[in-house]
Amino acid sequence: MAKVKDITPKYDLIALKYKVVLPDNTGFGTQIGGLGTRLASTVSESINASGELVSNVVNSKLDTSTNEILGDFTFGGVGAIKMITDADNGLWISPTGILAKKAGATTLAITTGGDVTLVGTITATTGSIGGWTISSNAIYLDGSTDSDSSGMASSDYPFYAGKKYVDRATAPFRVTPDGALTATSATITGTINISNPSDIDGSTITNDSSWTDDTTADTAIANADTAQTAADDAQGDATTALNSLTDIALDSKITPVEKLTLLPIWGAILAEKITIDAQADVYSVSKVSYGTA
Image (cartoon, rainbow, N blue to C red; front, side, top):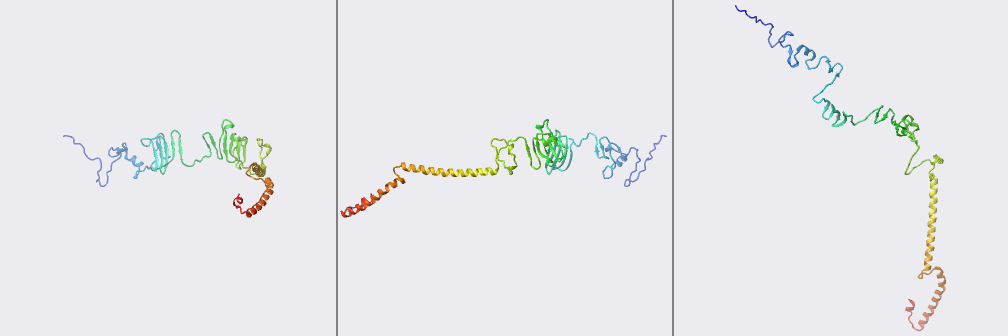
């Protein structure tokens, strides 16, 4: 007689509208093929019903307990990280550099070559830029020699040149916050206005034309104006005299001296005319031509 195979169910079957109970590690329904055949119990312990991690993930790449990403990592096909609110606002990090935008305008750009474009305020109390040292109250360049050193120290010498920072108090060119200027050598062109000329020590001025204060200069100008007036008057008198000499030389003009000589003669001519007119009347001779001659 042939042996009959036992086909008694090994599992308790319950109506599907309720549930199916399967013991663990039986190989049926205990593994999820889409998650690399991970046990369902393992996944349920790590992810809650909302799809959130319920325990920290710690491995060579990621540590969620310390909020760190470990080792080399890549986001996306080109390794870009985006922290943005929209296409015009946010921060982009990629293998080519860092880019920040606000309202569509680039506010920060840093290339992998080290070039930086920045819109906004830079605040720094220490550091250096192009060889210039930055401190909390000064920006200065200490060159290889004093002659190529200069700086700006707001507390004592806002401008100085010709000395290193530590020796700025003896720099050949320096200006204090009060406006006191020291310059051991200067070439100045144009007008210089001095409010207190008396404060200048004239003994130290060695230029060729010396110098004078405003009062002396004003007096000299007034004297020059007086001399000019006198010269103008003399010129007028000389012109009058020259005109008189010219008149004497002309035959068509009678000078005052000549008038004194001719006046008696003119008087005699007038007296003779009276006599001639009377005789003309006696002899009925016309006087028209004679009177208009």
